Image (tube, rainbow, N blue to C red; front, side, top):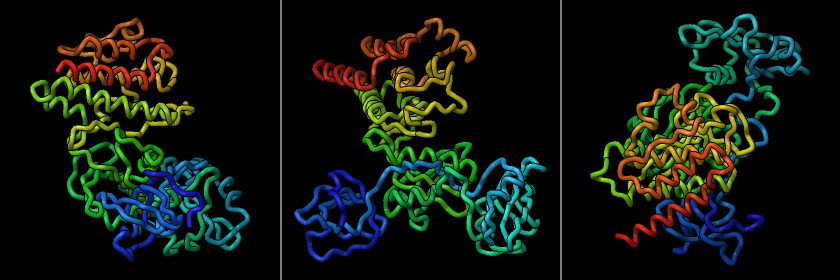
Length: 449
């Protein structure tokens, strides 16, 4: 029995199979996603619907509430990896000695290599892990793609080591990502995911279309454990966000060999910038363009309310569904608003001056990017700041330069772009204001049609 009733719309995942005993019941299989409609008179039962829209009653203790992965510690795929620590520090960490207790560190004597440190019979053994032809090995007999694969192998078989790896020495402040996603109800079963064709390639891996239990899905496949570690943060942000104009995370698969699969809803018409370029003015009218701007403003107003800063808002990071709904995606750089963490290669033409200069990211820096995205929409996917060399963009913008109004763009929309490009972040509108203004324009257009 659940302690307090879950509110309407709560997502939950089935822990067991349920066949149902009456026609009012909603049968389901372990792993199915369900959405709560209402609590029944009996608190042990909920009325719920499944992903196909079928409704019925379900037993409360057969399902687990899906919760955002908000761990107090740092999520890690390799909580036993301690980075740059010395031999002595490793030995202190593995004390008191316990046979099979282990950690992995970066090698101090051989930069680029690693060292596996294992406690065995009261002393610590250090095994050098060397890179050989792009693979990792200890004995030059067994070779592994990455550290996770190597550790997985030696937990099953000592295979020449002094002992099997029995217990990881977890780095302080880290928690095992696999456990956290499982606890939150986000783990999926790899056996039920059928990968089909590649629809995108990135430096991190492939994006593929797949089938998960009969539902068409998009899957980011990340094969390298170091890259996968970076994507864990993106997946954990996605577990905390739910809105019709955000691409929805469906689940996460972490394989013991270091592969990570991030499974999201499938967006049939691809990214907005390609959609705009391939359709053009003859296909997309004023109402379609305005609808895209409203969709994105809805998503961003939701992020604003929840104190999340996207940091990489651009038409390439907005996807379009089968029925032409725009949804914001790519949460790789998204952080809670309080975070000032530096980001990697920033897209200069989309990033606000204060974010580029002082790394000051806020909802207001997202508003600047939204202005650029509006310009992209109304110029049908052109690259911003045309004919200006990249190195000149920032100095010119800081002197007050703004892009011209795209051909055919209504003056009222161009005025919104200019409001977003105010050099004073405090003077820029909120997303709530932007959303209301765009909706108001849309109503006015409706009257004129």
